[in-house]
Image 1: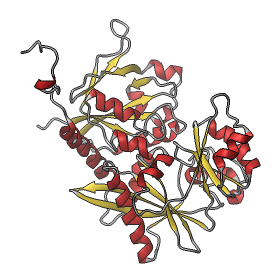
Image 2: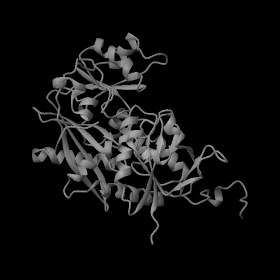
Image 3: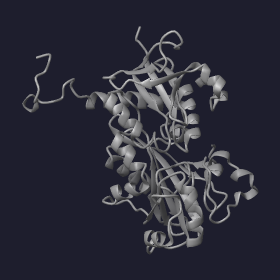
Image 4: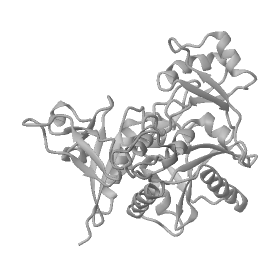
Length: 403
């Protein structure tokens, strides 16, 4: 009998997108192919502690309260994995709960900073443990919207210009002079948002400098950097996922989010009701809170050249960073002029973007997508694995004890 691979599904974390990550992680945990893998949850709390235990499989236990935590085991990652992961209980001995938990690969279901942005990827690289998704450099670069623009600037992919606004060393209010210098010649109305977050958290439309000053403190509590871009009139969005299957780049179905307001915010995407407001109207300068169930058109009818541009640009962006995983690439368009710009890249999209793959041609079920990500993680690890002692003989300054 073939031994099942043990898969640690990691989610949560110290990010404003913590809750969305938990939803994605639980969805993935339920969808992993149980005939091939033995998957278990690893929950990272909002204060950065790691937990394992069967209660984490039940969505009703989130966020775990003190009673639930008593039924869990707090663990830490052994950084000397060398191909195998190991979670060590923080409390050992008589009152400890179980021994070390070993696993073969990590299925990463994080969104936002401290999870999707290269930090946890770097941890698993250092520990020598296979992990899913984009590699450390790609994750870090693509989670920074300003770096994404610079990274792709040399490619024939249209992008909007931007101004970068940085949180001051003290507090969250930029001085008038500093703000004016940062904004420069940027025009209003504008869209301003956190530079390192997704899920539409903190996104706002501003009409002038006064509204910009009003929304920045809220954004700076979420992210030390804000990005300001021209607001696109007649706005339409197109999202597409991309991955490599059998050596060939493939794009998913295209989605066109339905919008009930000028700016699609977190609640409109995930709750489909604009926060309970009929019509979903949004006051100028208001800041959104985030996302849970997107109303969308899948595979909308598009002019052939528009669809081709979206798919080609998505594939080119994916290739530019040595693409792995199945990121979702988002585009903005002006419905009247037909102009399209790449907006951002989501290294790990909500729910892994499984609905886009299920609607693709040919369709790919969520379980198949996760299997691909897990097997790709193992292959990537094998390709990048270093020998036990990677120091070349002619670069060694000290005698090896095994020589």
